[in-house]
Length: 595
Ligand code: ATP
Image 1 (spheres, rainbow, N blue to C red):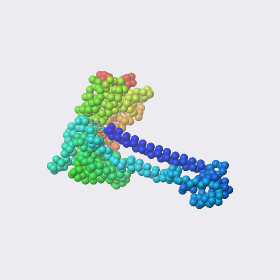
Image 2 (spheres, helix red, strand yellow):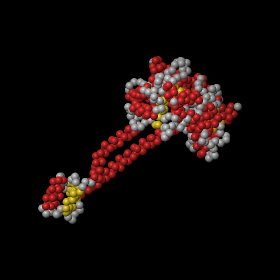
Image 3 (cartoon, rainbow, N blue to C red):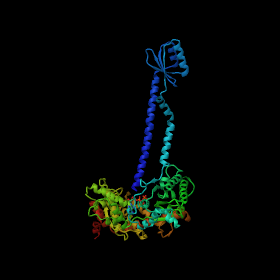
Image 4 (cartoon, rainbow, N blue to C red):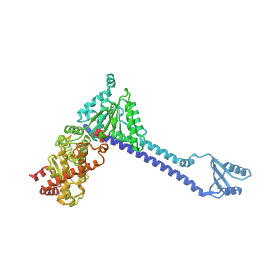
């Protein structure tokens, strides 16, 4: 992921550098040209009229005339005066006139100089300036659109990606499934001779940071074939109509490099369901159609495997999933506790740890975290250890890093009024106390009123169990816990604050999903109402029912939170006061209050 970001940043920087250079050149040259033209104009102040020149010639006062071939301007030197410039209507006629006068005995020195091309540059440049600027703009657009060379190829000198399966922790079954792809890329003939058909496309489903790109690179690395990657969103950028041509270019490149891996990240950006033929959607359709055409058109001798990644499988057009296209789908789930420990091990290889560090306990504390987040935590902990002046990374550095990644950076210096502190203390105490009386709530880890990130305080839980499914009771209790903060503010201070914004957002989202995705509403039953087509089946009134059901879930949860707190007002006071006094209290200190 970082590598991808770095590449993107580099490209962005190059793009801006190019724009800056173009601008500087255009402005610089314009200023230069204008100065020269100005200079000529200033010279014209010393001009003399043509009639005056003829008069002076007739009066025999002119000493010298100097002309440049092809130019109508004449430098005139009159006896005892400064040199002046005159413009003649016809060069040829003027020269003949002067020569006549010389023959008549007029002593005029007539000098004819060859053309000086440098003097013509400014005016030529100025006349070409609009064309040049248009050209520069065109080149810039082409560059930004990537009509040139698209599709990054990580093939270096050895034509190889350096990632191997051993660099990916966990995901053992997934790796096993993909091993046959590696074999196929290594020896395609063996499979073809047997009459086997190998999938052309493999879809990887999974949250961001679960290692989808890493897997695609590892397949290329193991098989020793080039890896071409592009992101779905890169196909569709600022200007319309280019997506399809980019797909064509990408596959042209792949055909040249075959056998190879083509990796399309965020395929939902182009592969979402084809709809009406209007505007952006039609652009999207063309791009998707081109991708399907390319995949259908692979010849047997073209060993190209297309891997695509998405975290929104439900968005994809069904045509993508048909046989001969992305007919294999692999789900990349966030790692379980064992996987997390392995990922932490891989990413701790080059780091120095103190003897008190237990990767196992970090793995236990980070349920639901993706590989990318875990890698980030270890990197943050190395930074924190350095700042703290530790010899090696200590357990407390890692714990601080976990908090930094989850809740944000500690803002110790933020000035907080006593009133705000009190509000936060009741709010966080509310969450913790309500949580204590909910059967399915995770055990408490720490409560704090030290601001972190955008949060004024936080209540952290130990989540040492990996859950793939959640029951209705669990979700209902989650709502109660989330609303515990708001309920405490209201009960203790008889006022409510904006501090509950995030809790309310999360609670509303959960309640909505319970009703529309998980079929957990009594009134609506197990019907998926996520998609507009499904909603349309029931007519408009269904939306009112959804709204009522979501509200009922929230209202019930809020009432339950208030009930728990009303029965424990004395504890709420004690916990809030202890928080005001100590700022952070541990699970043990919290539990003592209840003993
Ligand atoms: P996105 O959808 O954002 O592109 P992704 O699923 O493609 O994310 P990657 O870019 O492959 O995720 O992973 C990001 C980083 O996380 C990797 O470079 C690696 O450092 C780390 N990582 C993720 N999963 C694993 C894993 N199973 N083992 C080791 N490292 C991992």
